[in-house]
Length: 232
Image 1 (tube, rainbow, N blue to C red):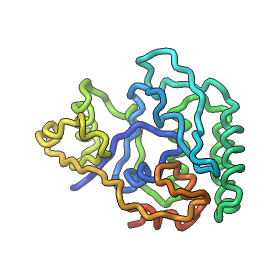
Image 2 (image 1 turned 135 degrees about the vertical axis):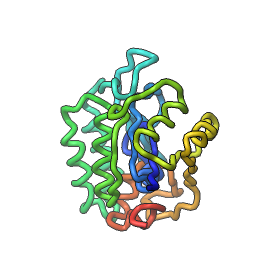
Image 3 (image 1 turned 60 degrees about the vertical axis):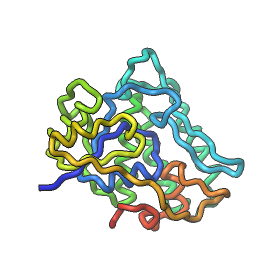
Image 4 (image 1 turned 180 degrees about the horizontal axis):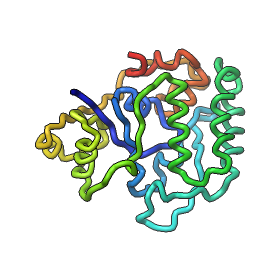
């Protein structure tokens, strides 16, 4: 029986390509046993504004260079109010703001007492998948036994999950040892994030590489039409 899986660190309100990777997978594993990296997508993402793109950043406490994503804690709980205000300021005139902003804000409200970055990211990812109609099974790397070795661990996770195919973003081409997957009888397929259609963004120039909430608030129930693998 064929089964494809993707394994990726959690990101904060990720861009549309992240959700296409989930939608294309039979199982998606949040890989938050990995080291937390500063100035990355783990705790921040971009939205569109009249003045260009703007970072929405969750303040976190980093106490060790070896700190894992799932060990990373929130440093200042005022981030939720700031992010909601930024969304209101920049998206209140979006076509689907009235219909979908409440659904997005309710996620924030449910996370007011949450201190774990990984759980915050997972909550947004799960809830946005529901909004987009993505029904992929989402697991966590903590649900599996993890061995040593960068590629070796990924291959072993695929084996444990019963995968015949591993889906990966193109950024991994520089380090992934495809031969190890081949020896395990697992095919590696690379995601192609090119060719996305533009949608009705409020502010020009158009930018594909912003948070998924930009697409949802501008296109609402039509959002899946601008993704490659949702409901396809």
